[in-house]
Image (cartoon, rainbow, N blue to C red; front, side):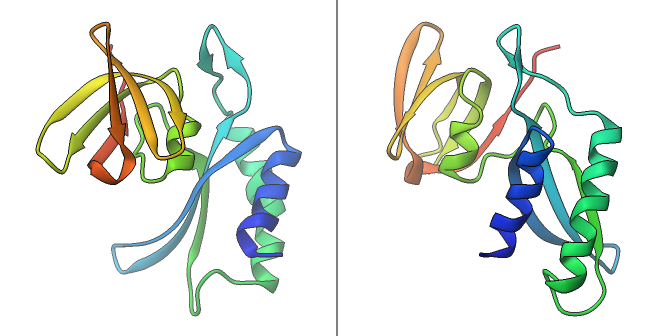
Length: 149
């Protein structure tokens, strides 16, 4: 099994979903960042993830990374929620964001904002002011979820 699938198994064991794993460099430090989201839907939206759950998950994942490090050299493990406004970089990210408000910048420079209603293959369906727009995943240069305060 791969490191990601092992991490996913641990994440699922605490009733969460693995959203993303990424290696970043910030302030001359390498960070292995694991983002999770809740599996529970409350009032049509994903429930929050508690800090205690993130700490518990950190303690579960850390021994796995001692055996199978994600990078060579020193790094810091960071486990947290993907957040209410988050980057969408894969079809899987979009599938996990159905029902949420999304903002897209297409390669044609067109901007699309609306509710992601479904994902079929590589096609995304967005309700933009009661008009359903179909966008190809490969035609997107930037995408994120957003929250209106």
